[in-house]
Image 1 (cartoon, rainbow, N blue to C red):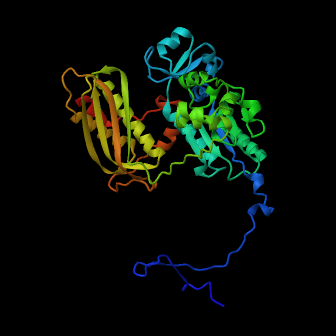
Image 2 (cartoon, rainbow, N blue to C red; image 1 turned 90 degrees about the vertical axis):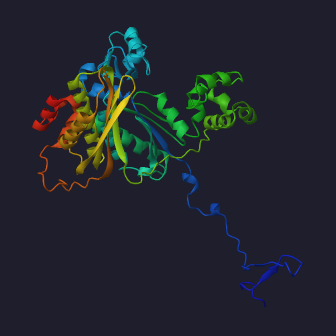
Image 3 (cartoon, one colour; image 1 turned 180 degrees about the vertical axis):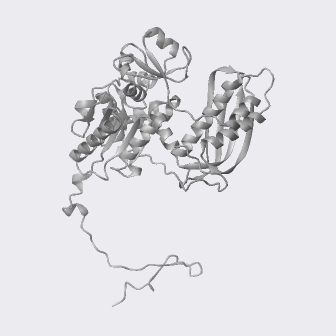
Length: 445
């Protein structure tokens, strides 16, 4: 009996012996494996995906109302330009302001005309970022980091499939996260649960604020199919009007539309819209893995009105460095290089940079060097400053081993406690005073 499992078996591939090619084939016996479905492993029972979409209700306004109870029940908006009465845009509003006609992206002037009694508050990004960071760290206690996607500043998707086996498990866990956000930050959250990201995001909008909606295979037609098709993300007013020309008004119409017509009229996007309406969205969680830390941190602030007043310019320099130092401490980083740039009202600019004596995130040291750089900038006669910014580069991790300079005493200023106070009550709640060196620079300039 020949040994079919031997590796010495050859199959000739051409008749011409000169150009004959041999391919070695290992002859193995053929086995018939039973299909996996014949095993009672319970796999088909848990083939659903479980996506939840969290949306913090009127996030900026809700935070400001929480910290200022006197604003409750009143129309409130958060604006982009600080200390401006008529310039800038409205970044977000609470439901009381929306009921009066004030909406997001409306100009401040228009908002005041529509609702004269509206309370407009300056945006305080550092406080909002700190709240979001704490919420993300809390969610990471329930799911792996790669299972969460931050979709915007106040929205995120979470894939509960790795930690949940049934819809009941997904509902219980999502409600527990919702209650934990309320307990930690005293903020309300709307959430949607479904088997794909599109339906989860649509579900969130159905019961706002502080609501919860679950969409499954069984109830999707009852809950969604009678809604206008522009409720699907990606379909704006212009696409919606084009869909209307083909008799597509509701999600049901879009789900039952002709695939070839959608492809012909809208290209690949038409196929995507149709699949999203039918609940066939297969989009996964987008997770961008951070390798290492940032290479540099930068901040810039444009003034409402250009200024040539030296104390005001120095205040902008100090405010810029103060923000950078907070970002460094928040990200646990140290910097070795500092750049200061000034832009004037005619769009010209000047830049100065300096190396620091050692890696640090000490606010006093960076302020001292920033003011020295400011002193070196050659200001043109009659030019007014429109924007001041600073940048820290050559970063490395802060392992909190104390002062990196053995020849100077370590700073005794409790920066961490100061950062927490500012996150809670704003930048103006506490400031670090000038020392004699900085006062000398101010007087010289």
